[in-house]
Length: 135
Length: 74
Image (tube, rainbow over all chains, first blue to last red; front, side, top):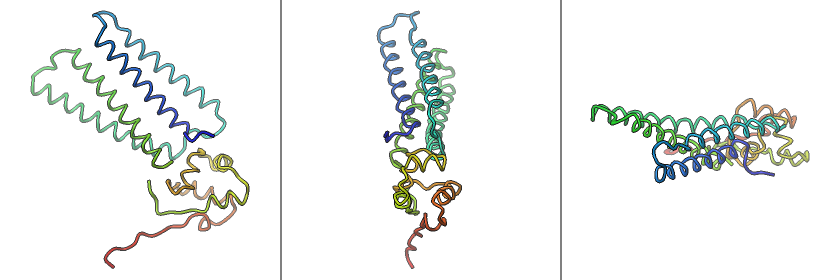
């Protein structure tokens, strides 16, 4: 019988998805010429795939897949994610106030994207650690 | 999540030949949560604690035991 709960399996799946996204993004930064953006397609496909698999597994399972312990762990992860997002937003504001502009819209979007990835990864890792500590 | 509450769930479950999954289904939590409770890694809510006692048909105090913290300096 699996030692990993449904939520833990979903977290590992999300972490793997983030690694794929980061890998594609790194390759995109290194090789893609302007105008060729497969990256957003990868992102959309991954999100759709993950949501579909998660919904299918939840409906197929006859046992409880999310309980009070899962919600307690999720609140821990959310706290870490929120801290990183808030610090990132403050950083963006400081950069704007300090430089007078955000250089370009591309730069701002890039910063926001990295912030989302960082916050997402931190949330997932912190929740996985919380699960292991209470496993 | 290191509680000061111990329990006898594993023993009670064993006496009734009940699996962790069966207990989890009765109290509406995941099997992994039952495992965490039995291993003193997670303290359930009051409602889940009462459900567990109800499943085994024993008083709550027979299932869970609170170990008060030692008072330093006394």
